[in-house]
Amino acid sequence: MVIYNVDVVELAHKYCQGPQRHPWNWNGMYTASHISEGSGHAGSCAALSAREAGCQRVVIVDKCPPEWVGGNGYFTAGAHRTVHGGLQDLLPIVQNVTPDEAENIDMNAYTADEFTRDIMRLGDDRSDPEVVKAVVDGSRDAVQWLADRVKVPFILSFHRQAYLVNGRQVFWGGLVLSVEDGGKGLIAAHRAALAAAGVETWFNTAAVELLVDGEVVVGVAVDREGTRLELRAPAVILACGGFEANKDLRGKHLGADWERAKVRGTPYNTGDGLMLAQRVGARLAGDFAGCHSTCWDANAPADRGDRVLSNQFTKSGYPLGLMLNVRGARFVDEGADFRNYTYAKFGRAILAQPGGIAFQVWDSTVTGLLRKEEYADDVVEQVWADTLEALAEKLRAKGLEDPGTFVQTIRQYNAATAAFRAEHPKKKWDPAVKDGMSTQARAVQLELPKSNWALPFEKPPYLAIKVACGVTFTFGGLMIDPDTASVISEATGKPIRGLFCTGELVGGLFYGNYPGGSGLTNGAVFGKKAGRSAAKLMHVV
Image 1: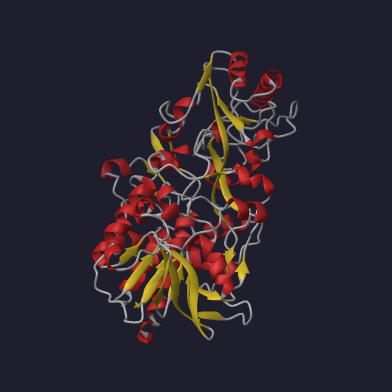
Image 2: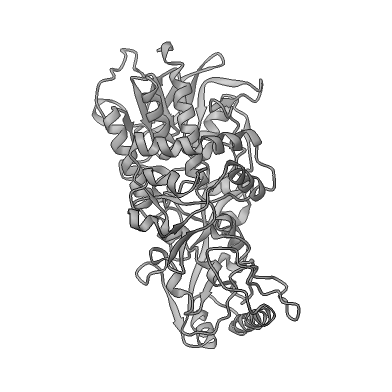
């Protein structure tokens, strides 16, 4: 079985990255039982699942060079959103909690109903209910499988999803699992598991055509340094991501402004899977005008992520402060919800501002709560000042056009927070809950509120950093059968035999926004399904 993640295959004996035990046929064709396109999290899950289900010859193909292995998964924090029964349910699969530490953790259970509601409410109830159900219902088994089979080093995400409140670690936002060393640790675990399972990975090879026999997909043709080679297999799994790294397709589907968005991850997710699948009659699905986009370091590379800093370019501390555009105006409710429910849409909001940039600003009351991996002085360019006026003047050199309005906006915000505190003296600021500390008093209200965590700027020095829009992945994709991960035919409405899909290429799951940590879970759930389904076809080889 060959697992194919569009455009990534390294072929011929001298290019094999794994055991050289699959002979070429005399006619120049390579046979396998499963082909997976893509070397990221979703493709790796599919390959390992297929191998586990009995496939003897599994190949991952990727157009990227070996040093770019891992797709977008490499650039994540490793967060996996899953249904769980609370702390005791998850302790057996995490590696960073001692018995003494467990005594000081507050973690609510996260139910299937809550997970479902989170996806549906953030997508304005447009998400395909059956696809959502498959992800939610399969989430807990998927993370257990990753821990047991792939040996993913899961940890509780103290550094991203908990605050220390009254001496206790309080988790918030439904998301609690991460991975040691983030996406780097996740992909390292996958590579070790793939090697142990004897799965080959072929790099530097682009998929150019799905091979069909009538209405059945029977393999994939690839281009290796100008030479066309055909890989024959009864099952091909597309796990090659969306089109976020393709400037032209971003402009076509998301809008002209998106041509200037920064690519957060791999530069090799250019829409190849969509194009290959459409040529064999696959049905498209989902939000082609939507994507995951977040607050991203304005000084980050434009067209690809950084393999060293990776997810550290994310700038997600805005709920603790304010975001203002170059004209000195706020443009989002920074406290509308927990960060992991808003960060994937605020990149779009930044992109819509003049110049496509903005400034995140805090006072010293909260700067100690900013995550060091995102905001340390060796990670991001910091601008400090002892007064708001001095801060605004320093930001002129960074693109701020109206320092006066910048200061006035924060002063008005301060007045609103003071009025709210005067009317609600018993309310306490608490970053681990939606505390209701807002700018909307009876006496004073802002046109654009900050609904939670609204503290006045009153303790200098003040800190500002410059952010832009970073696009992570696109939401439009292929329609699948949520039970088998089979790709659906536009003509018949039925599965295309031999063609499967997982990961960011799955359409119909996310619309407009998404709950943090759902993307990797999606890749694991449908990767497992695709691998098992593909294994049922291996008798064809």
